[in-house]
Length: 495
Image 1 (cartoon, rainbow, N blue to C red):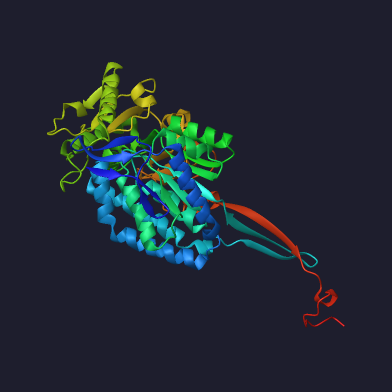
Image 2 (cartoon, rainbow, N blue to C red):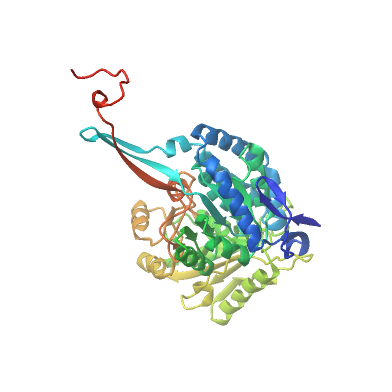
């Protein structure tokens, strides 16, 4: 049985709290590791180490940080298969999804490799006679990241590269459900040459989270997770005078207009709804069929579900893996029943599919004729369930997005450039896809939604990430005329 502890000051530190949690392989239901859960004292120790390391790291040169970031990128790329293996073993996602997660994380390291350009300030010479004014951006101090189970490698890499490149030190609290991948990427950072204490990992549960949120030496907190917890993190961190970015849940809509390429839309709906077993905040969970395309769209999606291969993520043929826990499987299955009880048409019922072994598998489900008063529409299901809502007009479809409490992402499928242009203005969401079902921005833009999908006004990674992890300082300076100086430095005078 593997035992997973903490990483503090560049060393693995055994847990001392006496509390542990079991880590499971979702494809088998068997325990694969035992995880140490940090106490308040252990969190305090990690923060103290990070605070001590900050005093030197903040003065490191941009050249040094860039060199280390390039080395880190090379190591993560070289170990992509091992990271993916850990993701599959503890999260359950298939290898292609796991490698895609690593690739998106790598993009963020690559972005941070340009930190010398990203941290350029502004300068005004002679703002007044003999007075220059300029702006610099400086690190905050010790910052923390609290990351979710569904992307245990990618989401930490949304935070760590920018935080370290801008001169901060970092304490990561990953999900206790799949901690091996984030521990490994932290170990790779130390192998790349980042000084001890610059990047630390404390594994834990709510006790560790609460201590990070109220610790006086934590300057900022980054969080990705469910809406209720994001609200809690945001409010608690704010009460403790911390800078905070908290990304939350979603109910992403994909509008399909009558003129859409049906095959393109159906392929997109299946990949976006059922990839990673639907356990992602950018999953498409509602397909909005406009007009007479609805019957054809439902039939096309059903045909593709019938061919979807569901199985353990380490099997090459698998296209969708299990859910993260048995509780998650039962909760998602319950929504299928709720949809049927409310009068929706269950076209494909994932509960009907049988699986060998003791894993947390559930088949892909397709529910048609869903209405907005049904729980299957209202709630974030976070599983392989696609709801189809039928409307008559484009405006009705857009109004669904506008009235939904979440605003993470939205997509439209159409051949009409005018409709697409109108949609990008009309859609009430932070990330928009035009014939793209999951519009996750590349690393040189930033990730974040609107409404209940984001607490605060700071989105994740990219330019917003650099701004989040730095504070601006404006300097106004005047130097005396050398000819009036009491010390003769040999400068020429005006006489």
